[in-house]
Length: 111
Image (cartoon, rainbow, N blue to C red):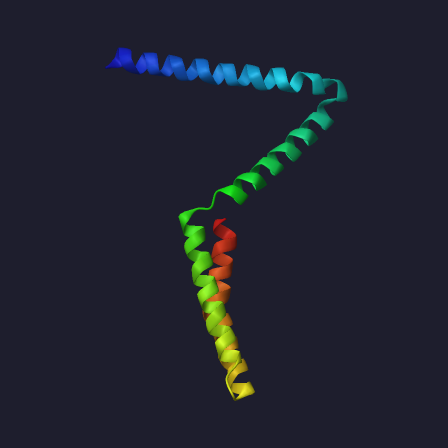
């Protein structure tokens, strides 16, 4: 078993080393701009890549929170459409304080 794990670790180490060399090879032309610009370009690339990943991939928790938020938002809108405007505003305020704000901030903090 130890020999197997040693081989697996050697493959992982080799793969990570190849990845690091590949990134170094891609970044080496940018070194002529100086370290500040290289860091800036890498930061912009990382932020863009992260935004793209968030756009294409949603976690299950985020999808559940979004569904719950839309549900409570529709309940709030229905409360605002009641005949008594003051009562509707009071119910909407309670829904905001009790559910919508919690769901919104949970979704912001989780994703």
